[in-house]
Image (cartoon, rainbow, N blue to C red; front, side, top):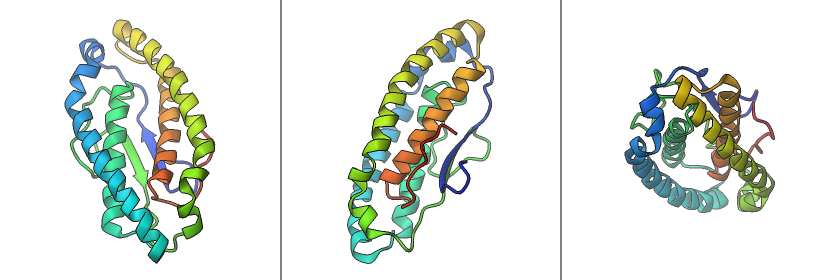
Length: 191
């Protein structure tokens, strides 16, 4: 986790994966994707409600913040599986799962919220969103090459694995910021 930033991602080093599972990864992930999408949609509604609550009270309700953080964990685990960062199927849980190789570290900021940065959040996140969008395009190409290599060798090369993890790490920080889990601006970094 980036030193001092309240949202981060830890990914286990590249490990061997079943070639058949790699080949059919998108099909295998469909149930997890459907549920993650539904949970993300609920979280986005709660983000809007949180936006209003924070503007009026200066506080993020703990129950809403914990649900949004859990939705972020769930979504990221599914994407980590799709992006070949792990061959282990993502668990169906909003909580952190100790034995899963991908951990989203989130410390939601409940008190002392900056109403001004919350009000202008969508404008403030534009530079980060542009960078993450460009990285996602490059990452998609890199994932494709990693997928081809994993089909023949049974594992994603370490450099590709680290780059994909870095892109996902950056994306998680930006998404957590957009989801109002923190007022601290995300660092421009893959680490």
